[in-house]
Image 1 (tube, rainbow over the protein chains, first blue to last red):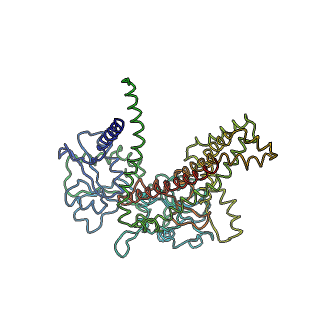
Image 2 (spheres, each protein chain N blue to C red; image 1 turned 135 degrees about the vertical axis):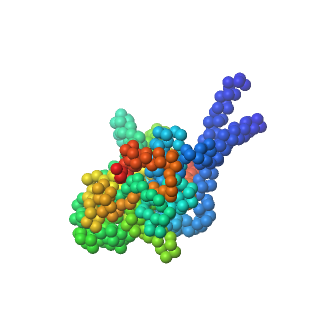
Image 3 (cartoon, rainbow over the protein chains, first blue to last red; image 1 turned 60 degrees about the vertical axis):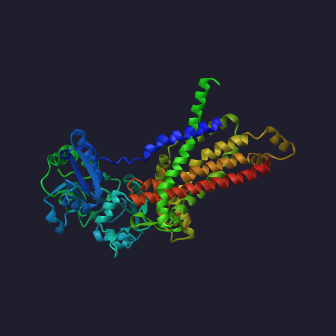
Length: 285
Length: 296
């Protein structure tokens, strides 16, 4: 009997210690001064970068806290309209109808995706339309785009990957269906690899493959394809000539607070842009 | 009872409780996180749906289940005969000293990190299948084109990975068969081969079976190596040259950036994986009990 009681006691104690796990850790709204907080909200593609920048910024400026929220690019515009964020984060250009609510657009980084093929491939240039059709499976033989008569092996990234998100969005592989839902039409016959390195290794060693990796991590084990005649590079991305690229914007809806001004200065400083580069994006200065 | 004995007893009790509680907590956590999606999406649609495309809201995991089962079966088909043959060779054919060196080399295999196996598979096995196995395959079906990322590649690598488990446990149990069994068999005029097949293996059956079960557990749960070499194509495979995605590989790859519903769906995949492993363990244990009864 004694034994059972003590076993039960130990179990209860252990469980008691674990109930602490149930509390949400996300409550950050305590003990901050209004002047000392910078809020960014918007694109989930910019979110990881904002978090990195925010963390480094808070290390350097302990008095100011940076809060990063997601929601999507549209949410970024909404957040500055409703004045619930200092910066709206966008991973696309500001649309015409949104221009009225935006006072300033600040490009903090650029994101580019390179299309790569096996080094033995004869194809050196593809149009955006061809790329879209290859990745949706409508074009399945290299001869249709000027290569040899061989089946195209598409190599894609896993669902939810940021690179896949950027690539499918820009090339329109991801499109709205009739009901208005975003549908990722990447062919089901695609090999899927879970990292940039694995995609490069696969494309480098497997004949007739085509894949995509973020521009920052290209190496010469694979052949890079020109898109609409433009070679992907930092310069062509920054100038906007290379089409599979997108800007990361912070937009503002009015006067910046002092804290927000210090934050944006930090983002555009050498230190901030070094973080941009480390995160795999292209710095703007 | 002395005080320190009591204290030590409590410490041991807590240690024992930790492992039990861990199992309970993990189970509760996985089920809690995954069940809402299962309930909302429908268990049948989830298990028998053939489209896994979380971004588009379809969560059918039949391709993942067939993927996991096919490479596990493939690994066992290659690994069991090789492993048992190797165990017999070590315990019955090789002289003791050579066997020791041989065995420690095999056990070294167990210490290699799985991602290294995966990389080896990616660089060696996958191209080898493309250039040597594919031409043989094409004799029968000239239409086939394959990249080498396949069930076959996954099975070969997994078979190598489960070899140490199968070999060392089988070898131990074959060596543990009493000398008298062997001597009696030889005395009755059976030759070495007959003695091994008719006497030693049946006597060591339960050990060999448990080595297979442990190997199977490792094969089903293996993730890193498999991600790199099976191609991760969420499609029900038609042949051993087809790429497949596995349950574990999908969870590992997609968990990082998954949206909330997607994440819940991955936990639901975890539930299914959990249930499959439990089921296989139960089947294995029952069959072992049955066999063990006959053997003794």
